[in-house]
Image 1: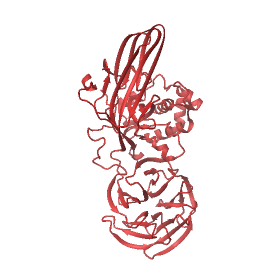
Image 2 (image 1 turned 180 degrees about the vertical axis):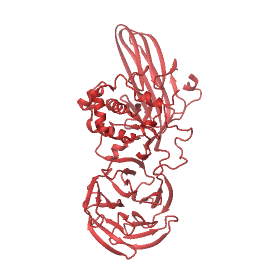
Image 3 (image 1 turned 60 degrees about the vertical axis):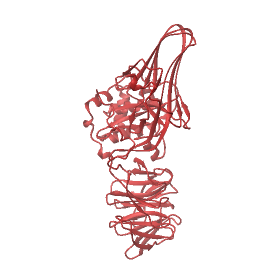
Image 4 (image 1 turned 135 degrees about the vertical axis):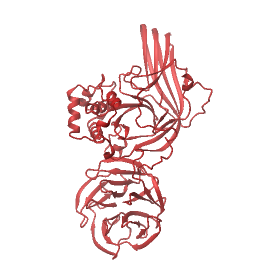
Length: 546
């Protein structure tokens, strides 16, 4: 039988620290000098840290954390810091100035006003000086000698402070979100994000095969891993109790002769999801089956429902959920020819609703993708096109891709159908995930649900993509939904549609036959509680049902 999770999560590894540190994980911690550590740079193998309050520059041995030199900065409140190998570039937010300073002679070589007037982080790379401007929420590429702006683009989010350049990418920290971003320096596309350890990430520096970050609140300098192994990180874990109920009610006056309720069985263990006890069923299912996608489903059978009678199927389970962010480099993704045969045959195939045979679907995908061959960028370009060309609207029903392309609006399911169709039409495997959602408070009810997509990337595996969630002007929020999931979804369903038991639905579905004029009401919803309930070993469970 096909293994439908290509990223295999070993027992006990889900929420444990991986053997190899993933991107952004702390590998070394050093004390930060000064009262308010701000900018950070690396020059000749030594770290420099700017103390904003006292106007001091500290040279630090990155092996021990010892201060080896101390100098007064050429300004009162040094903030951003960068090095070109000879000079230190220093920004001062209050005056809007940037200084080129030689730490050997202690002379300011030149100084100029920054283009935006509100300079924060600085970085040097590719022969350019890079600046994040807090007032304009922009990142500028500058001529180092005089500060002439060569290019600029929108900052990932609204509180960006730290900046570094690794020769290919920019790295940016945001104080408000406590996040670290890898950014394409041509246009500001955020490749991925990870949560920072410290609550106040400030300066960044690149060197010695590490990304260095100074945290003002913790007064620490952190050496961060740049290795994408594993290619994701899980953070912000929470534990909740979850109950799902599905009713089929006969409002008469005729008879419901048969009612078959099909409930998707929640996944016991995924990258960011773990069931903390056995599933408790009420009543016990009549049988368990798998559909064409390998989705496990509990089946409940009822007969001869009288007018006014209700058939009910439900389950409850405690669950641990984490915030998931995939973080890897696009160049690490293998070519499409490396997609396993069983994955390609299932998840690039046509189904009844996807309309892969329609020219408007194929032509749209071809135009968007162009001559791109990297599966990451194929998926990203299609993601950007869908979020830019659809506007979220729940109008009832699940319309097909041709309608959505012409209409320009859709629900989360319709966003998913269109994205899957575009991906499959150019050979990128795609499917959907279905869930029940925590709506606001931890104690909440959800009868709306949420569906998003997954794409298969060779050498990475299945990765979540949510085109409707990524509809934002902020680059950080866009990438939050390309390879990320919040910790408020319990994933019940993986599928591609045309399921023998769920049709094109997810979470639950029912099939009813009636006799005479009969009104049937079908309703499903999830109920969340903030703390897991006690799970009795004697309670009927999924394991016992088998």
